[in-house]
Amino acid sequence: MGFTSHLPKINSAPARLELLIAALLFSLPLGQEGLTNILLFALFIQSLIAYRWRHWREGFKDPIWILSALFYSYLFLSITWAEDQASGLRQMETKTAFLLAPLFILAGRKTWPASSREFGLKAFWWGCMVAMLWALSNAALRSWDAGALYISHEAGRRYFFAYTHLASPLMHPGYLAAYLGLGLFSAVELQDKAKKNWRWIYRLSIVFLIVFMVLLQARINLIALFMVIGLAALFLAWQRKAYIWLGLPLLPILALGLFMGLASEDMQKRYFQVPDFDYDISGTDFNSATYRLAEWKCAAEVIESNIWTGTGIGDNRQALFDSYRANHFWEGLNKGYNAHNQYLETMIAGGLPALILLLSLLLYYTYRALRQMDFLALSGLLFLMISLSTESMFERVWGVLIFTLFFPFLLMRTKESDSDVY
Image (cartoon, rainbow, N blue to C red; front, side, top):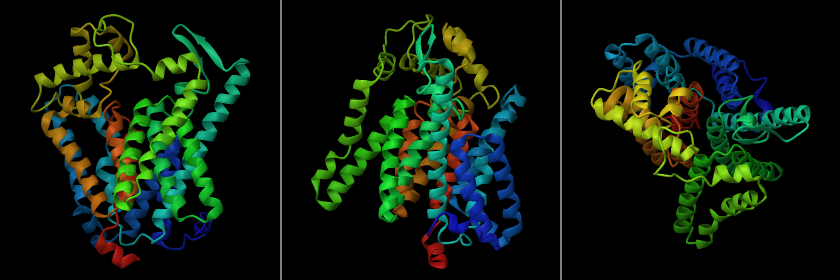
């Protein structure tokens, strides 16, 4: 079924819901907060109009929403033992989608058209394509104006077609790389069902997505991608008794190696940075690996002092900055760095109970994906869980939205609802 064939079909509530979720998924990689907020509000209004009590009851009893609501509610409760409650409320505003987004999607799972998944994935894939073209166009214009491919910086050259400069019109490069990784897994599913010409377009887009992630210098995202591809290769080799699949992970690794051979010295340095455990935490000579070692050391000290209840959301960031000061980590303090690890970030704010709730939510999503044999959701979840180890993704709205919208959308079908809809 074609992508544009859905556009005129807005004469029913299910079709309007389908269009709204597709528009939301399209908008997410673009990083335009105003547009996404308008679409979220439209989805909220349409849900209130379309759903009856039986629909809401379905959403309220779904374990995905229950665990999301428990995680959100516990963090909200932790504001009561924080001193800076205004900061806590601002942080919880960022996380509101944990409470609402899964409910709006899961409550209507028996009303969504059977074509919703394919249509939504196509919209998300198109959003990724437009985002990459937008970023490349912006980089090309800046390069043209500067008359060079880079600008000089005290720390070295900064290329317009790489890292923060490339991602600047959209969002932080780590978040954009996470979106593009999920776009890649979406393309894998879409190409499997596409007609011949589109099948090759989706396959070429996979190459484009990997190259773009390399340009974003998203190392942990690429490591996560290679790990997921490696696990998929092991599964296919075992399932099909065709051990040629074990060579699958070598293709992107060889492509990355070739690219690195042609890359600039500055990009090579960033990719081949390794942790130096003898680093000077009070100095200025850091790379991204040693930055994280310093952040995690300070975060661990905060957690050790507040293991059971955390600092309370609101005091969490100041507590981390106080630890930076106590450890003389002046670079992290001056630049206001977070812990760069969502699991540590969650423990700082809410202690061990918050971490248990977060892990329970992630593990239930994984269980649901396995139970439904949804390999796109499973691959995406593994990719995201690895990425959370070096990014505090749920501290920004773009990390929260991709988790609370994309995965409930994929997993809203149960065996019971499938029999009703298909």
